Image 1 (cartoon, one colour):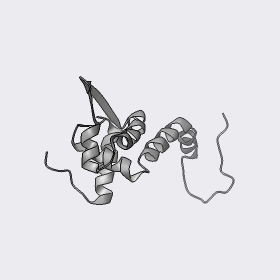
Image 2 (cartoon, rainbow, N blue to C red; image 1 turned 90 degrees about the vertical axis):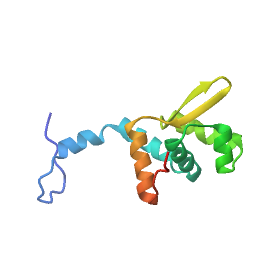
Image 3 (cartoon, rainbow, N blue to C red; image 1 turned 120 degrees about the horizontal axis):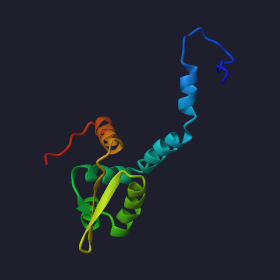
Length: 122
């Protein structure tokens, strides 16, 4: 395989081949874009942040956010599909919480850092 050379050299030593290989992994970038797309809605950020601190059912989330249950469910679906939250069923009730993943922890920390808010005392 021939070495990749940039058309315009700036005199800097760079590992262009490594960068080019990383950039060619489009699936990883799609995953990141999907996660950020889920958090592009302020309501989803509020729901995600809440679920980082408490496990809740749709009815309680609805009451806390003063929204209808169908509206909350509408926001929970893409968060769950993206792997940011998980659910468990107990009888007829479904409980949601933030996923125990590095991505969810990073996003939780990022939200709190950007907003300069702290986790509530649990």
